[in-house]
Length: 136
Image (tube, rainbow, N blue to C red):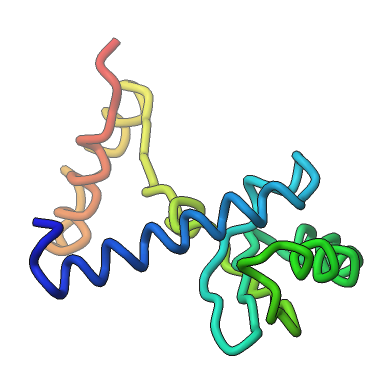
């Protein structure tokens, strides 16, 4: 697969970013490493993705030091600026689905109420709600 032209270029780019990531991590404080990832490096500009605003602020305060340390490395010799972009991890973006949990007595009470309702839509909604009851 590594020999197919588009895949070869993609694999090469991924390896390059991984190498740059290791170099950047070597210059970061240990606590910051898991919060900062190399997104791109071109035309003297290094774009780093940071997990939240707190870490972006901390890294911006260290930007001048980090820039000088990275410029000392051969791969970043032409580095002129570092940009930080906040992008929370995708797993945290998803809101957990709502789960409804009712006691069996609450479910029985809702079902009894539904039995006395003549409106078919309201009755169906109450019956669906009653089905969420726990079995004792």
